[in-house]
Image (cartoon, rainbow, N blue to C red; front, side, top):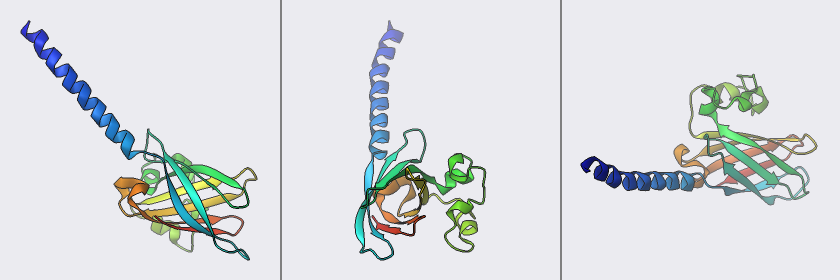
Length: 165
């Protein structure tokens, strides 16, 4: 009888602990919006919203943005540290130098030179195969986008989005 009573008193506490932990994880991984400014050759700067939804299974997620001309881009984002550890194969797609994300001469070697939990990269495409590459530097990596940072997205068509969040 004593064993039975002990099991009954521990079970509700354990269930409550699991529910609280699950709630904290869900609260940390919520969708959000990053506000940015789109600048394109010959066009005035225009505000845009970059939407992100974290993946519940890993540290990356899905990102999307619709430009003022109606083009909608979407794709995955992830942390540079995950790519280095082999947890985000979509980022390099067999190219460990990650040259698709070249920002300027030597940038890839600098980006992937050491594990960095504060740098997030995204690769977005639209329905016409135009691409958008984004790089964000988070103020506090473990806090994700909600804790702020800066970012830049470059369009294959020549535009650029700058964000401070």
